[in-house]
Picture 1 (tube, rainbow, N blue to C red):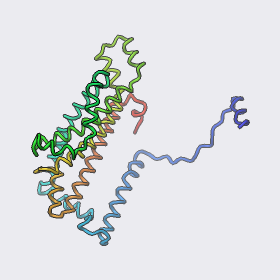
Picture 2: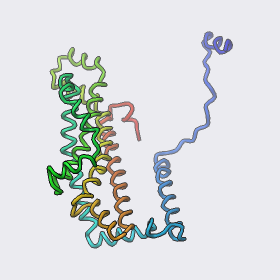
Picture 3: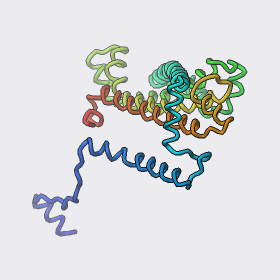
Picture 4: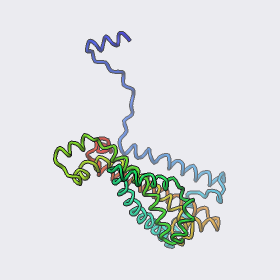
Amino acid sequence: MSSTLQIVAEGTSYAPVPSARIRLGKNALLLISWLVPAALLVLWEVLARFGSIEPHVMPAPSKVLATAYNLTVSGTLLHDLSVSLLRAAIGFAIGGGIGFALGILVGLSRLAEAVVDRTVQMVRAIPFLALLPLVIVWFGVGEAQKIFLVALGVAFPIYINTTLGIRQVDPKLIELGRVQGLGTWELIRRIILPGAMPSILTGVRFSLATAWLALVVAETIGAQAGLGFLAMDAREFLRTDIIVLAIVIYALIGVGADSLARLLERRLLKWHPNYGARP
């Protein structure tokens, strides 16, 4: 300990021996990220081929792929997929808009927080399945019921993260804007919203996952089309290949939506040192 203090006192530079590091390029990291899913698929195929997994329990990936091809050729898969995507998009737009507006209002006003936040948090704590009977009474089993559940699920993550992001903006930046003569709306547009944008986009990523969760719940009741309907209809005929296909499609859509959200982060947060430098 004393020798270390002496070295520092004399101004001698000291650095620990760096550990060995393996530097990988962007393409190599991307390849590695897909190796594990690919290995799991190969293992799944092998186990199914040799009978270690019963076909009625978990069909082989090749069987699921053949089912996807047949449903695509017949037009069934594309129709159900487009219906689910449309429901998710409309619900996301409605719920996201409401959550964003309420988040800005509560984030900027303590009075609005006192009026709105408690009620929002109480509704947020209610599970989807508990609300489903009441929503059916309100809207029936048509499109409105499904869009309402998606919008409800989407609104909360965006609301919470928008409020949190606004509250975390550095007060010194706001004071600087006022010194520069910025009005209220200019202050919000140029300082508060950009400062809160990382948190807002995190809320968007969470809400994209919640949108599909809500849609799955909604499409299990009274749906005549959609991925949820496709899976529930397949259950009646013990078509596990179609059920697994629907699950895989949900997973792929989730990955795609998250990738779009990450791309949006990189585009909107180029100025941010923690985002702009990301590959």
